[in-house]
Amino acid sequence: MIRSRPAASFTRSSLRYVSSPSSRTTSNLACSTTLRPITARPLNLKKPVSSALTLHKPLSTSLQRYATSPGNPDDNINKKHEEAAARQRLEPNPEEISATSSVHQIFEEKGVEEAEKDEDMLAGVKEDLKTIKETFALDAVPREAFFIGMAGVLPYLATSLTTVYLAYDINHASATGSYLLIPEPTAELLLNIVEPLQIGYGAVILSFLGAIHWGLEWAKYGGVHGYPRYAYGVIAPAVAWPTILLPVEYALISQFCAFTFLYFADARAVVKGWAPHWYSTYRFVLTFVVGASIVVSLIGRGQIADKINRLPSPADRIQRLRDSQLDAMETEEREKRERIIAGEEGEGDEEEEDEGEDED
Image (cartoon, rainbow, N blue to C red; front, side, top):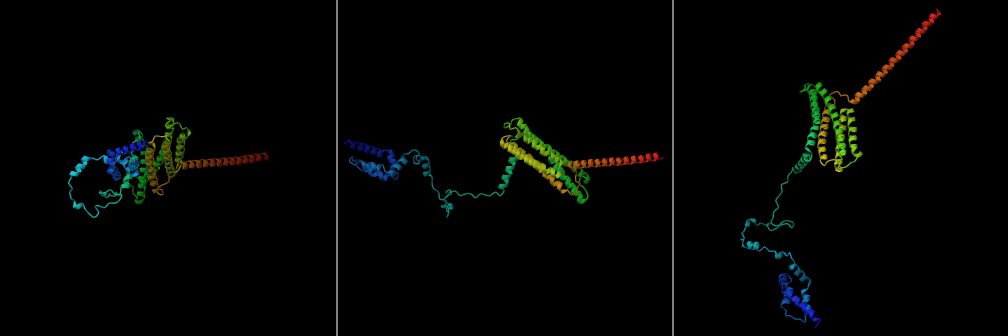
C-alpha cells in the first residue's frame, strides 16, 4: 500500500492534466490519437504505469509543449479580419487565368510579377559627375579660405590663357602673313614677359604652401611635431626657387612635379591629423587648377618652339655674364703683356742710346 499511493497520486495528476484546457488544445493536433484511448479507458488503479508511460511519449510531450507555449501563432487569430474575409464575395476573373498564372519560380514571390527594369546607359557617367560635383563643392572649407584660394589661382589661369593666345596669334601670322590683334614681334615680346611671370609666381606659391605647415606647428594643431613638420616649410622653397634659373619648359615641368609632390605631402599630413580634414580636398582643387594651367602653357609653348627666338633664361644670363668677365680678364691680361713688352723695348732703346753716347 505504501508503494501504490505515489502511483495513484501520479495517475490522478495525469488525469487532471488530460481534462485540463491545455490538453484539449493539444488534442486538436497530431497527438489526439494518443490521448483519446486514455480518456475513454475506465479508471484502473492497478495499472498506473501504462497510463504514465503513454502520456509521456516524446512526440506527445513535444507537441503539448508547442501547443501550450506562449507565442503560439494559433492563439493570435484576428477574428474580425477572418469574419470580414468570409463576408467577401469571390468574383471570377477569367482574363487573369493563363497557362503560367499558377506557376512561379522557387525563389520568386507568388503572385507578384517582377517589373522589367530599364537599364540606364548613362548611370556610370552620372555617378562620376555626382562624385566630381561633391568633390568640388568644398562645403566644409571656410568661406574666406575658399575665396582667397580661388583668387590665388587666377594669375596662373591668366598667364596660361595669355600664352595660348599669343602662341595662336604667332602661328596665324606665320601661316597667313597677317596677325589678328597683336603683331608678331609684339606677341613674341609679350610672351617673353608672361612666361617669367608665371614661373616666378609659381615659386612664390610653392613657398607659401610650405609655410602653412610652420603656422600649423606654431598653433600646435594636432600636437607639436618639431622638425618633421618644419621640413615641409624648408623643402618647398628649396625646390621652388631654383626653377627660375631653368629654361621655361624645364621650369614649368619642375614646378608641376613640385605642386604634385606637395599635394601628396599635404594629404598625408591630413591623415596624420596635422591639418584640418578639409585641407586635402581644398588642396586637390587648387592643385588641379594650377596643374592644368601649367599643362596648357606647355602645350602653347610647344606649338611655337621653332617660330620664335628663345628667350635667354637666368642661367643663360649668368653664363653670358661669366663669359663677358672672362673676356674682360683676357683683354686686360693682353694689354698688360703688351705694355710690359712695350716697356722692355723702350728700356732697350734707351740703353743703346746711352751706350752710343758713352762711345762718343
